Amino acid sequence: MPIYEFHCADCDAPFETFVRSGHDEDAACPTCHGTRLRRELSVFASAGRAADGMAQAAGAPARGGCCGGACGCH
Image 1: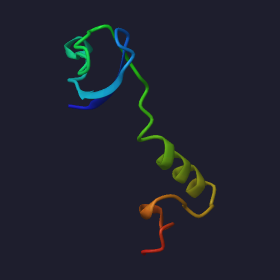
Image 2: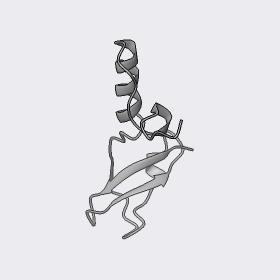
Image 3: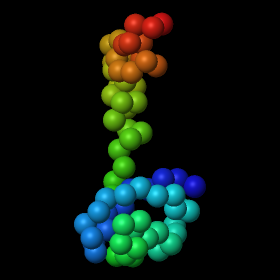
């Protein structure tokens, strides 16, 4: 099950929770138990990898976290 980010319209709290894909109605706010939720756009997977992939495609060296070699441990 993927982790989705939500924002509660009842108490204005942001939170993350596991929800089966297509079953947003099963989610509830952990703070107030409200069900008036808005699913937020999650950008955790797109920020670093897309930039590194575009840089490599253009012939530039990869930069970023440890996997990109920027930490100096490899």
